[in-house]
Image 1 (tube, rainbow, N blue to C red):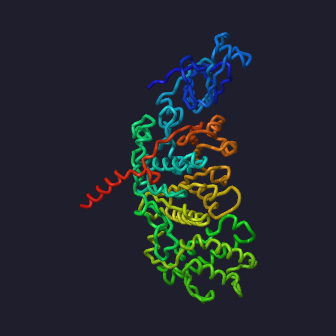
Image 2: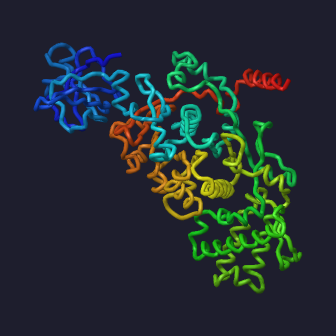
Image 3: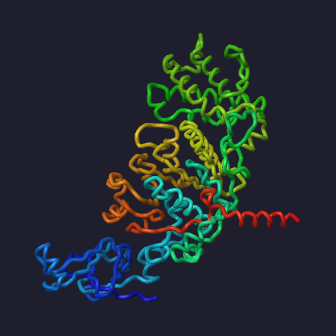
Length: 583
């Protein structure tokens, strides 16, 4: 398909190597987000320069009128004027890269397939994944090298909850990553973990979506058209492991705390020995807990002492999940720590007993020790069922939440029914253990972490172990193959280093006040205005190689994102086929 002429470079507006205006010819249509091309001769006649750019402003006006009311005269045919239809172009690429301005009167063309790829640098992307569909129906791409850590890493998605479809776009990207790229390294090169924070919607990602054909038909498409255009299969996620916390009131039995799906869900929890040995104690304290006095230093020392105790226990019997102590503690004079309550009572004895152990207290004041104990009692109701000392060695392995060690490509970890502090604990512990494991294994497999509500886990103000860990992942994760696909309603409330390290920035519907924050300066003025009312399923995408944000839409998912979307007919067919294969 050839480029089509639509006008010429406007002579009444300044033209520079980075931007210019286009006079649109009669009977031609130019819209926001259109991609245009201009070729201009060099003044010395030594060759030409090709300009490619994206339309970010369009306007019309009557030339020759002086007063606003003249518009009515023109409308009624009583005032002869000319209609000016013009578009502003933000330059995205020059070939060759010589920063000369285009000349007034130079012909302007609508970029067809090959020119469009050059304009948006798609032709220079060695490895790319679909980012969505542009307004003209052409696929837009992301350079995968700026996602997987080769040149850059991390994706950040912002937008109003329930409207901006942040989780939906994160899932679309994950689906594209699994089906559009190839990596070198090991045979199993990609894994992902999704923290499910809202309802139980994500527990059906391995099922086909019943409503997709109906939705695509409303748009006038065949069910597979838009997915085919993007080169993606119309299939659900495969090889998925679903995990949920155990129910509290059924201990010691272990039953996942989930209602809508009864099969294929595994409970998760941690052993007391593991909590202490792997130095996970700090994640029992949220940010505001550690901002007062010397509590952070006491927590660090207690964590260190518990780790030493666990290591000593491992030397005696590494298969146990509880802790054995040398000196009796509590009113019952126990010698074993088997429950989270036992752990609190043990620390009470060490820190605020009649004769506090200075090796544990390390010259801290009694008030600081009391603050630590109070916070442990405060969090006990939320986390006691997640930390147990009565698990067998087999159960510890069975209920372990470690995405990199799982035999599945995708792990969905439910945290929506947990209290706020328990959610922080689960996310912090999972990421900490993943980070430590990746330091041992190296870059492969690449692990993608999908985490919503980043402002809660890495707030701009305050300190917390999880925020420190997320900063570490943002700054150093690319070298370890840990990629964060983070989302939040307001990027202005997230730690700057977490948002700033994301190579790919995505924005859906924004609040008017939020859109004016400096975190969105990568958006043009028109993009900021449009972000106030864009529809669900439409996003602005910014990546390093493309100077202008791209407005894209993404297809209705082929995988179910809630129970009501599950296509049970295909599920039954798959089950029958699986049973048939057994024979």
